[in-house]
Image 1 (tube, rainbow, N blue to C red):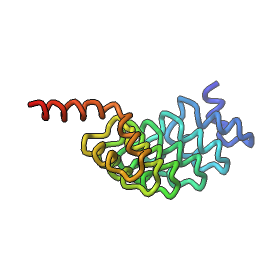
Image 2 (image 1 turned 180 degrees about the vertical axis):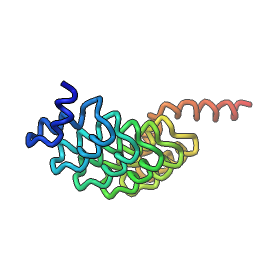
Image 3 (image 1 turned 90 degrees about the vertical axis):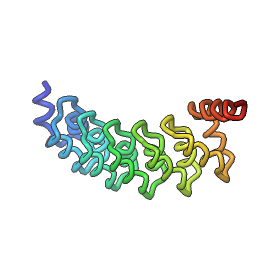
Amino acid sequence: EFRRVLFRSNDKSVQVRAAAASNSNATAEHITKGLNDKNKQVRMNAVRNLNANADHIDKALDDKDIWVCMEAAKHSNATSENLHKALDHKVPEVRMHAASHPNANTEHIDKALNDKNEFVRRFAARNPNATSENLHKALNDKNPNVHYAAKTNPNYKKLIDRKSTRLNS
């Protein structure tokens, strides 16, 4: 059954090509083929595939369709380079996914906290990978929603506890 689906990645049916692109046994070649498909659903399924690698994600971030780009920005295999690229994307929703990504590091979060879009900054402020420096930056944001997002970050309590410990010493 698997081989039949993959061999049908040239099929005229969008549903068959989309199924081939999302197949858990798809190879890098199959995913690349899916990313080159004219149909956005096939491209989305290809980049959602857990076998997609950094090169696939990079290619999907250049896609003309915002939905394909968003799928790329939230892929679990996104590398630091993929996230940097996503944070430079013209569409805020792509940047939001990168800002909240579990692989985002301090540098990514800091970059997102400098974004002109409030929602990107809010997503960055909520990221559990945010350091105390990131949270201080978010707490000083001119937008109260970013400030609130930082206060809902799981690391905020640790930050406050450290401050109160120092003050009580």
